[in-house]
Every structure is written in structure tokens, then in C-alpha cells.
Length: 318
Image (cartoon, rainbow, N blue to C red; front, side, top):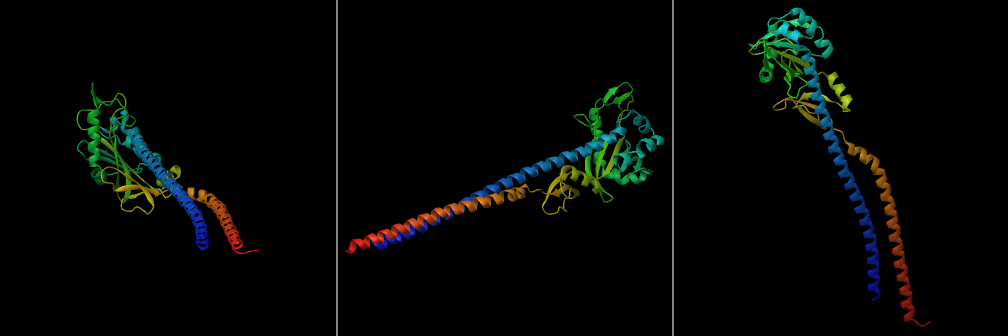
């Protein structure tokens, strides 16, 4: 009977140690799981914020290009200088002299109603119309879409047609845009019909369309990255995405080009800040539970020694 009681007390002491160890383990696992879940949520929220910021910034860059272009394509003087015939003094002064230097528009092409290029300005140099054939072919669908937008928005007035709303800042803009590659460079492309802003009027028929090409240069991407707080921000082919990068598709249809940047990990900050505290609490809890288990084991040993002495006294005469 005594041996059975001794074994039961030893098993109880071992159980206390095991329970304390299980509590410590459960505490550690629950807290690491909580930190892992919080880190995962933080990573996803940050990723969504970054994608939203990038999408808004890229849309803003396209709108800036369209607005810069509209300084020519939405202007009575441009209607008079480019629609019926080309005023080359106007082209030199109003396009070649400041499209590239002021707005970074590398290529400006005027496409006539017959879909043939009427002029090409490369940076600040006026080139032969034949050199624009590749640009017109690349953006032929954008030219057609710009004409459709014009046809749906034009209003008949005495002497021809006009557009009453702003072609860029209105709810239904006239311009169309895309991201495409030409001559080895990825470009933003904007197409918009040339329309008057005040008293000039357009004749019936297909309008002239102004095409502008703005290359997405590394310096421009670096500036966007600094502005948004993103590391290694770049625009590249969709099949050349670096590892651990987040991605936003660019353009329309199947994505050929994407904006990429190194994915942020707020979870790393959470772990770096919380792990020392968690380890400290875990050590304190282990010490406290170890102390309780040790005191309980000592109490059991004292009780066992006391019972053994009492049994000896009960069976032996002093």
C-alpha cells in the first residue's frame, strides 16, 4: 500500500511538471501564432495600400501627359494651324520648342483623317512624315478610339462642330491612352482629336488626331519610387518580374508590361519589436511556473517523508 502511494505521489509531481511545461508551450505557441497572424494581416494591408498608391500615381502620370498634350490639341490656334494646313512656324514654336524640354514628350505625331502621318516631331527636331509610320501603326487602334470619342461628343454649331467640355478634365474625356514599346523603350501613349477651345470650328468628317509618346525613363521611375516610399520601383516586361516583388499590370488587354517594386514586410518590424518582449514574458512565466512546480514537488516529498516516519513509528515501539 505504501509503495502504491509513493508511486502515485511521484506521478503527481511529474504531472505537475508536465502541466507547467505544457502551459509554457501553449503560451509560446499562442503568442507566436498571434504575431504571425498580425504580421500577415499587416503585410496584406500594406500591399493593398502600395498597389492603390501605385495605381493612382500611374493614372495621374497618364492624366498629366494628356493634360500637357491638350495645351496643343485643345486650342483654337492648333485648329487653325494644323487642321486645314500645317503652319510650320506654329509647329516649331508650340510643339518642338517645349514638348520635349518642358513635358518630356519625346515624340509628337499628327495623324490626318486618312490615317497617314502629317508631321513628326522627335524631341525638339521636326522629322519627315515617313519616319512616323511605325508610331502610327503601333497606335492605330488608339487613333480610331480617339476619333470615336470625338464623334460621340461633338456638337454642331454655325460654321461646323465644337466640343463643349474639357477633353481631359471632364467626366468623359476625349483622350485614350495605353502603355506600349517602341524602339526598345516602354512609352505612355496618348491620342486625342484636335478640337477648339473657344471660337474655332471643325469641319464635318474625321478629325486630325495628335499622338504623343512619353518614355517611362528610369529617372522617372526612381522619382516615383522615392515619392511613394517604394524600393526598386520600375516598369518592365511582364515576364521579367524579380522575386519578392509586387506587381501592377499596365495598359489594356493581356498585360505585357508591369510596374514592380520590392514588397514591404511590416511583419518583420512587428517581430523585431515584439519578440524581445515575448521572450522576456515567456522567461518570467517559465520561472514562475517552475517555482510553483518545484515548491509543490518539495511539499510532496516532505509529505512522503512524514508519512514514512509515521508508518515507521506505528510499526515500531519506542
